[in-house]
Amino acid sequence: MNEPRAIDPMNPRNPIAARGTAPGDHGGSGGHFAAPLGSLKNGRLRFGNGAHRVVIRADSHLQGLYRASFGDRMPTVGVRRGFVTILYPRIPIDDWLDRRSERLAEVELNAHTAWNIEIRGGASRLVADLRGLRLGALSVDGGASRLEMVLPAPSGTVVVVVLGGVSNVVIQRPNGIAARLRVSGGATKLKFDDRRIGASGGELDLQSRNYEGATDRYDIAVTGGANNLSVDKQRVRKEGVDLDREGE
Image (tube, rainbow, N blue to C red; front, side, top):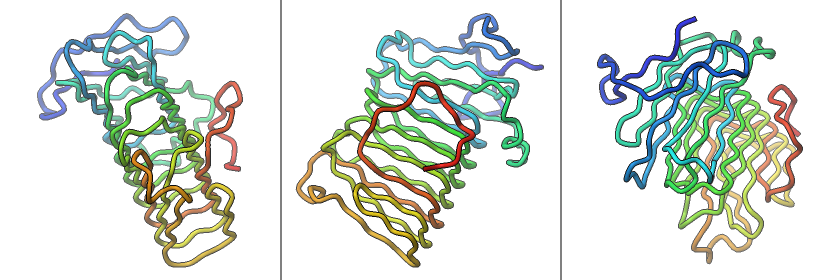
């Protein structure tokens, strides 16, 4: 199995040196990759061809910019000026979903750095535990299935966008934080705080009671419809990650 290859994210044809360690001791053939923080105050994480069976975490003890390890499927990894690009080979989505025994990819982000997170090509069986992170914005283009997202306390209005529809998705935010949820394309089995909607066509625009007057808040938008979507206040998560369970 080939090791991840570093590229210049501004020019994918131009390989650059990436800082990594020897392959991990936790099984599989995945390597460990990292980059120094230096004087960077902002970071950007982009998955270019989808993010499947991935765990993203914030780490307040991490001294570098980021740290990552991968399962049996090896992406190309690029780092430049705080811009981290992870590019998997194009693989049919059904092939990803069938590999339930594959070791998860894990990406840890420095919690003291402000981050924008972007996923192109869709996300499935993904957990983003971003508690403690300084999040600027988060977007998923290509739809999301079996996704669990735990958001940090926001600064200002933080936009979270999912384009292409969602299925079995849970989004949690800290208690007391205001949120707005807009869904276009219809919704079934939708939960927004204490409100439950069995089915609705067209567009929905829901707000928590304190949204209009809040300085720090989330603006969440979903296009392409939603099935089994929950946007709620944070609750205690169970230990371990089960990316193969159905949404609640």
